[in-house]
Amino acid sequence: MTSSVSRWALLSLVLLMLPLGAWADWGALNMPRGVTQISNEVYTLHMRIFYVCVAIGVAVFGVMIVSMYLHRKSRGVKPADFHESTTVEIVWTVVPLIILIAMAIPAARVLIKMEDFSDSEMSIKVTGYQWRWQYEYLDSGVSFYSQLDAAHNQARQQGADVDLAKAFPGTSFHGEEDVYLRQVDNELVVPVGKKIRFLHTAADVIHSWWVEDLAVKKDAIPGFINENWALIEKPGIYRGKCAELCGRDHGFMPIVVRAVPQEEFDTWIADKKVAMAANAAQADRQWAHQQLVANGKQVYEANCMSCHQAEGQGIPGMFPAIAGSDVATGNIDTHVDTVMNGVAGTMMSKFSQVLSDADIAAVITYQRNAFGNDTGDTVQPLHIKSLRMGLSTDKGADLPGKVASMPALNSNTGVN
View 1 (spheres, rainbow, N blue to C red):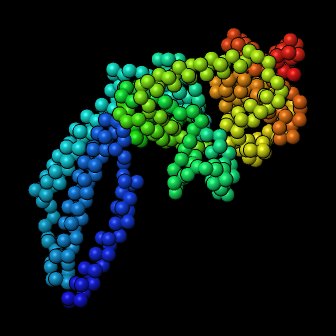
View 2: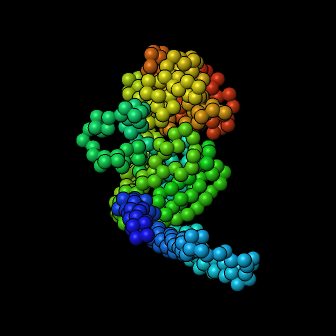
């Protein structure tokens, strides 16, 4: 009997020690405290309810284990013959109800506070696209798109064979590559100590903007505006992702929020306005063919390569090839219309909403002169600008046909 008890005791001790490995990395498994007051309240609420659930589990399984041990057949115990107990029924109804009420009151208080974006000091509109985010600072007029960094996007095209040391020389990824595929080309920069109101929507499918350190997670739904807020207390970089399955490249739609002091934020806003004005001015000058091709390569790698692949070969059955395609080697008006207005019923979205006039002209010029598509064509940004102006007045009516009927643009500033 003694040896049997010893074996059971040893087995129980081994089983109890098994979770210690996971406990050592509890911080990676548990919800983070975050850097906002709300995130800390969410963490506190989470831990409080977690320990309540642990206590309930210990009590329930404890009673079960003790009952099975003390009332087992080998001890000669006979089962009770009662059928119902009013007292037991009342206890296991009232006690859970009290527990639920005790958990619901603080939970409701936190949820109400999370939805209270009154007294916000600035507003940022977040629009989800496949597969990028658009950020619009409604108080300052600054607007830009943010997507997976081009170098990371190019590296991932190599699949499991990617050598990060070669793809990113001089970069340390600290073990599990904590920033690989989590870097973006344009960070969302916000000031610390200021209550920021976020307005979430989408232009194509449902997305979800989630930054766990800020305790901000909200669905971005086409045609709807959802709102929440954050007041970041500590400068730093906080990463997130799209938490909604929004398509094939859903896993490559990261979010990077950089919180900085107010003075640094004001400088950044001023620089962004200057850059936006300079970018808009790019459409009013004549570009050299080689310059458009060079810029178009960068635009292609940042915006087109995920679907159409690095060498323009596409993915059979999913995304058409650009190399040798009828669009990239055929009528240039059709090519321009495809890039600007997308293709209904397919994954090809409207890049007129995403890219500038200079970027659209550059990427079309690149596609028509890369991957063996040696058409020699050049599309000037001013031509795209004229089409965009036409789109606003004619609402898109037969514009592709007008491209070829603009001889002044064809000879000087349009399609060469």
